[in-house]
Image (cartoon, rainbow, N blue to C red; front, side, top):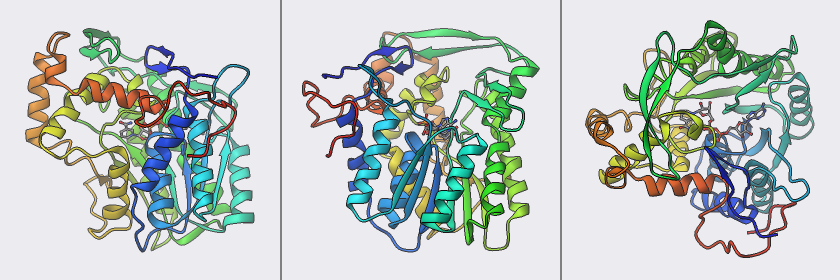
Amino acid sequence: MIVRPRIRGFICTTAHPTGCATLVKRDFDCTELQEGGPRNVLVLGASGGYGLASRIIAAAGYGAATLGVSFEKAPAGKRTGSAGWYNTRAFDAIATARGLKSHSIDGDAFSDEIKSEVCEVLADQFGCIDLLVYSLASPVRQHPRTGELYRSAIKPLGAPVDSRTLDIHTGQVTETHLEPATDEEAHNTIVVMGGEDWEYWIDALAGKNLISERFQTVAYTYLGSELTWPIYHKGTLGRAKEDLDRAAEAIRGKLGSGQDARVAALMATVTQASTAIPVVPLYVSILFKVLKERGVFESTILHIERLFRARLYGEVGRETDETGRLRLDGIELRREIQSEVARRWAQANSQNIHDLSDLEAVREQFLQVFGFAVDGVDYDAEQDIFDAPKV
Ligand code: NAD
């Protein structure tokens, strides 16, 4: 069938098989092989955004065997699969064709069943892992011990927030009012996006002796600046991310010397998860333009390549901030970048948004998350939605 984008708010309900596969291959091809990295890598949240980029860098950049876990929708009837479903199939095909061991599991990473399945696959096919990347972004978590279903809420804490946001499809800049989270909503967000599940993973893997002597684990956070703090860093999500810092310290306490657990603070980018956060579309649209004008813009894949090269396996070494985090967000947070973003933020409206921001690039990147707007792909060609095509 012919697959077109069908956009509903901040989500596209269709995904393009050839477009998704083409982007995975493009990132594979632009990655150079380097020495001294991990050999066996487990990526949780491996089908999109930062998790997929991490898996590609581990495989294409260091020749690692990778086991990826994600939770995606398979195609059914006339409905396409989700983008992550095609990305994962494309990844497995490309990695295997290049002689790299690759195995993917689709299921709920929060569950005990998937943890057991991963441990079995590692024990049978991989052996100990050197690196666990924790890159889940989910609005819900069924707690494995109680069965209770928790939903996260992206809200401010303490007081309501009036801010601005951008509809990337219409270019409308509007005011948005967000009521503060209740205590229960704040708590539930920590249960979903905090560090407890990361700790459960380490316990499960270490309990089966599946972590190597040089094992490292990294979970991703976003800190941002004053523009996004009311919604993010000082809101429910930021509270949950603080819990990741707690978990990192707790995990470090359980690991041996030569092993490590770190939270890495990454730059804002366009992914399925991030476009759902109010204010992020306006912020990244302005940020991207300012970064590009100064020649310091990094794509998602290059950002993760730098994390591996300069922090995890690095030439620069294990520099951390006062909380023990690996910082990759220094460029985004430079004073001159942030003051220019703040200046444009204050002026932005629906008329001048194209001049002040890189709205077109953000719109394109949003479409690319679902395999659309990819150069060289024939969008009038028939697609077999039940498989990822060879590219
Ligand atoms: P994404 O939406 O692109 O990817 C999320 C991944 O999680 C997907 O692979 C999805 O299948 C998987 N997933 C969700 N629920 C799952 C479940 N129950 N079981 C198994 N897999 C599940 O998200 P992203 O933006 O790349 O975010 C990844 C991490 O990076 C998050 O912790 C996020 O907070 C962090 N981060 C994101 C940004 C950003 O701007 N996007 C910036 C800094 C940090």
